[in-house]
Image (cartoon, rainbow, N blue to C red):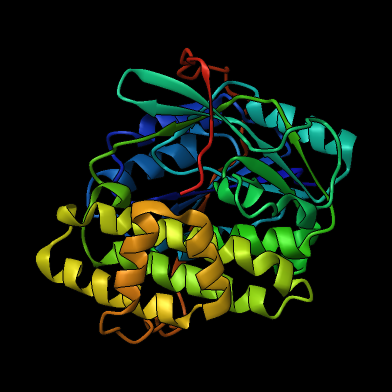
Length: 362
């Protein structure tokens, strides 16, 4: 039986993929599988992944016939996963040796729906520990109770799918798939749904994921139209939370976080292409008008200062209609599985971490 399935999307990361794959090899076990999803890369990534099927025990290569984006690539891996537990890794990040074995042991002990973990943020030669905003470690809680309070950083503000491990029953309940076609902010509706609908979770002080920041090919560094997917992502958060039995309690947190994201993107509007900047302004105005207005008024009062003033002015601008979701065109996938895997010697890049720093809501 497969104990753990690891879903790893790759797209044009030939510079970083060897480190990622070496760290997977250092985490291999007979009962682990690594689902490597090539999202139609156009650089040397496909050749690197083909070698990995031979070199990394438990590796399975899944290929998209066209580029679909991170959310859909993760879904492809989830659809193929056979494990009792599931987790994610991005194709330009890496792990410490034996990390997944420690996560599995913690899940076996705590027996909750999912675990959240800390991680190491990497920017060039700098390292910083980022803590999951859950104050007590190794205790099982209700995920719903970890959404609030609205004015503080909480568990839904730490959306990284790869910073945790998830029981298969969440997959069977439809809680692990991502909104089709989202290229940024795909974790936002996902983490909110997980916290609204899962029954139990915990956080542990386990460091082992190394997350690269400032990668030139990352969408967080590119000011094109794909960045605006955050609006569709958070429209979904607002829509789904509005239908929740606790909507009156939860919506202030969702609206306040959405406002913070809009403010963040408008504050950095100079990095966008001119036409995308115009669309960002109009779409943000539309988003503000679609929010529950009474909740938005309360959120702006609580925020105060220049951000609230800017958002009020933006709400008065001519809005753009809500972004349309992409058509759910069937994804064409080819599969290459590894031969019978022999155990590999644990060898992976290991980094030194810096002092801890709290994760701040976007």
